[in-house]
Image (tube, rainbow over all chains, first blue to last red):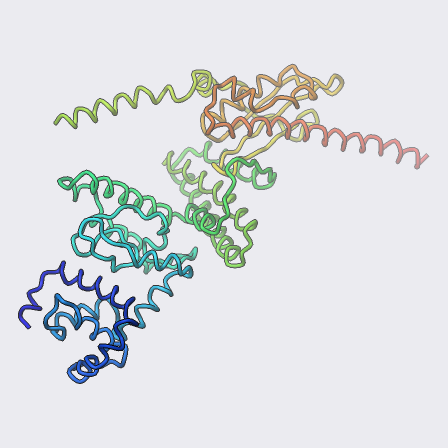
Length: 300
Length: 163
């Protein structure tokens, strides 16, 4: 018992990796060891059905762990896979993304430093040795912040807090004494997290980004002549230029923010309905209003 | 310490490079834009071109004043809210259209403006904006004129009908 409790972190994570290998090989192992399984079943204090036993049996057969039923091992298991064990583990990663090929890839992610397998969905930092991992571009910005892939982000998601938490783990200052390889990873990862935060935090850039994820690019080169909109923007820009006092600028700014909000609501509904042309139109309008806003900020 | 010095030197180098990012012609047009201002857009001799770049949110207004009998562009004005390249492009455009026939200015290509200002590839869309603005202004003038012609032709017809 005491030996199992004192076991350092690394071998136990290694043994978990082995668990997964064993799972793959479970069919082979199944029949000859079925008798032992029955034994463990009677010994186990927390029987959560057949599948849990299966996992315990597997850990039992690990060479590292002499005491498979130690509280330590049980805890570790309930952390990685929820109480229903093996089956929920499977559900977990097949539900995360709809592409099965992608999910199997993710499962195989390992730390380049200590070789421990990733346990959290966006694998940016190794949980075992806190080493920063190379950038994985298949992880999009929404996944990075554990958000649903949808346009509206509710306030309670605390994007800023999540962003700060990443920086606490990824900031280049944390690894200044580490090898160059990790310093590079830290620079790239933290830059990407900054970009992700900025992109998602601004309604306009978030709109452009989410359309990009849908495979729709907002054409940068096209010049659209929408006389009414352009006349309106021209008028607003002139008003900003001619505004002499703080109050006047503030008034225009609040008007712009109102318009931005209105159009971002229209964008969200266009996106939900997969009306991409309409969504692009909303983005165009938002770009103009956002630009006016920028100009006001410069002058304030 | 050494690293700090090195980075400082890098920064100063960058500052030196920065002004050179824009060609001197762009800076000249940006600092002393030609023909800034507006004509009365309801004036029948004035054509107004209003264009925008949705990607960056820039807006450009280019107006031409046309001699009704000769079809020559006698004057031009612009007002652009945008980056330096957009302002320079529209400034150049107003200079180029003055004294020319409407048909002639329709052939002005954005590549010529870009070449004149040595615009980098990322700023090509600014010159595109200027080209579109010229075309929009000419088009606006022509539709206005066609409309007034129809009106003036319609008037005698009404008179004839009355008589």
